[in-house]
Image 1 (spheres, one colour):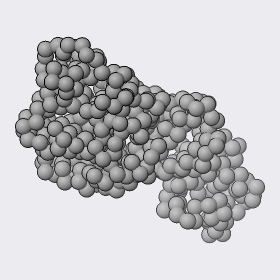
Image 2: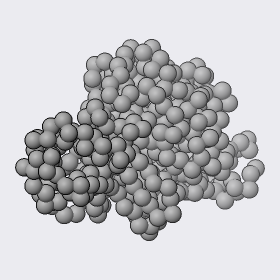
Image 3: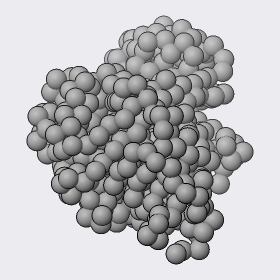
Image 4: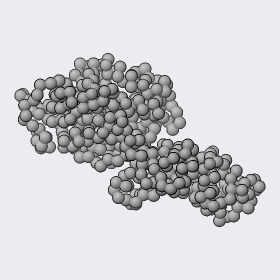
Length: 441
């Protein structure tokens, strides 16, 4: 027996109750995937899903605006925040985004690609995804017990000397040879994610990296954003955290009554939260001039932008500054920027001074985002932090701390950017764990 096991292995006589070869705690995306792949790799394996909710799949149903962004057309380790990208790479390679697309196609769920490589079901309904997973689990004989909150898990020694798990649930005890923790994190608590899985993992000797919201809308101070609610456009947000290289995120950003949302803001929220947790100053600024065909690429520099304005003034000297800006940015945003900078939008381009031109370009390329908070776990799509990644075996998702325990999905210290990457992490980790459990029992 490993030394780590002795601290939580009990000789208490086992209570009678339900028995399963594999008990999966949590019936979300990662839990359902693990159950399906375990049953596929080992027919007639007794697989039981335990979940505290009355119905499975609440998080799947609300994802992607109710359409469920199943995965992305292009997935790489660089799409994830993790302490070890080689570990992420190994897990993703075992079940890639192409494998996920084939998996869902075989379940009768066709996928189509949208902007930024996002793959959605052809039905545009998350219900299609959930129903397909539940049908496959049922076909394979997976048992599902809902309204069964897991209160504790202990390793116990049976009469023959073998070790099993005793799981105490709100509906009675369960004994299992293997346990998979697929409880998710703390994001979207209305779907049942309350972070209890971290306590279960800690009770089995795992280390929990402190958690924060990720993929969360950001709350800004001041009034600049309040008149811009509803405006969406492409931007690049740069986060500068003391002691780290700048993090740059490109994508759509949505101005709201409380601050900013949309993919770019939500992707960078993780960086701000981790910096705040660690007590390090973080400054965020947004390049507003990525809207339109002239933006992006190697020429996206201050000098190149200034040259565009010089050339535009030569071609259209009588054009007003505001009109020229409205070719690149939404009119309400243009008005707000010019007002904030005290620049007259009626100025003809030929009369725009070099000093004003450069001040305007600099401001538009580095507009400050004075973040005071995010909208928290209530609105976050995923949790950053979790079970330390070096405490699992990436070839099997097995715990290095507790023999017979496996961990999958969001409970681990890995979180992806927006665009289907966190669902891909669920499918990939579920496949690796399911295969390992199915082949090793």
